[in-house]
Image (cartoon, rainbow, N blue to C red):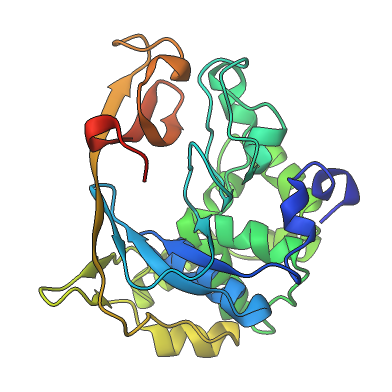
Length: 273
């Protein structure tokens, strides 16, 4: 990652060796891979699970760190656009290129469209997988490859260069969009993570195969999770009824998922997490 971008991310990201965290997992491979990176590098383990309807908890011993989660408050690694207007409030503790580079609705097409896991991979200087299939899988998470095969290739490449991943640009030039879609299908990357009837996390993702390809242990915790906080999931188009993120009350998370579409969760009853 280029120093200019790295230095714009929150101060806490530069002190990971000295502070213990528990991570918050969301429902997909992008978050799970990010949690695996945190466990591999810093011993930080998953203690909460967020499924857009509620927060579930096992045993939390340390400060929380959201992974691929656009938290309104608290520390998180994130890749989402988190403001509608350029002067909307943004969580100062989110490690998010789109937050620090002032991406909003008016310049939405300039956004970092890579995954949270790819951002963390770059920040921590992890070596890229040695095989083409491993690199393709890493770029397939959250469909981080798509921008290269669109009208936004120049912006997509600019962000990959900022992350220090010129090697991945070469790969994208050699491969086709179909190559990535085949890997996404082979490794079931669209599969979700959920809680079963016993409060344990399960998924159809072939975690052993993905772990082997990326040379990183990716696993779900064995602990039982119990309901901690109910949330209300919301979705709205720009102007109906919101013109600014600041108009949404009791926010827990917020992301502008398309230029004119916002997805968010609010705290049920307006209480803190």
